[in-house]
Image (cartoon, rainbow over all chains, first blue to last red; front, side, top):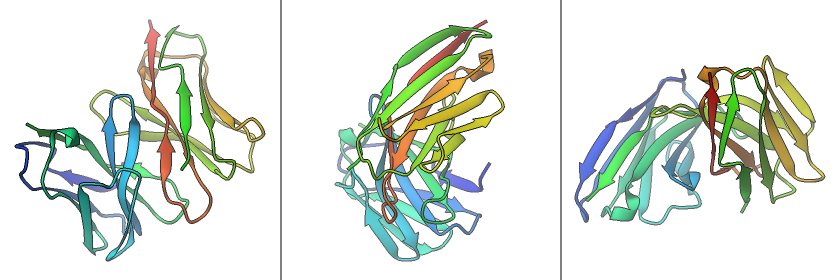
Length: 112
Length: 113
């Protein structure tokens, strides 16, 4: 398995609270991604990063922000969590543009 | 953006039979088509992929075919085994510079012993 660690693995929070999910990689890959997985929707890209401090939006970026201060870490922040953000969040990495994508183990987030 | 449709949503086969999952895509510029297998509670894992300059690729019991003209691609699993039971996702990536993989909604495959 690719060296990707997500934390926490599970989190329950209340509507309106801020939440930060962390993705850590040991592969020194340039690209990192955050996806969310919901029944009936497959996996959808939230944000991605193509280098330190270089990020871009995906198809479902509203309500989320990201930061990448080091190659190995990519943080996803929900500034004010809503129930619609209850989902499983997967981090992924790839060595370069157009390269294979490898996923972390996921974070189950419940917003009550 | 790209739109990927996947069928069927569920598929049950007897052990030893073949399984076929089909996907269509909308963006004719898409050039990379991976397939992921996801077991319950686990991460999606890449099982095979194909690029637009190739029509077919095999890896032991699994194969993927691509028809660029019709904009569809398929996953074929032969001699299915119970451990093949999982959810399978197809995906498509657009032209160079677009890093988003667009995923289908998944197929739950059940292999009946």
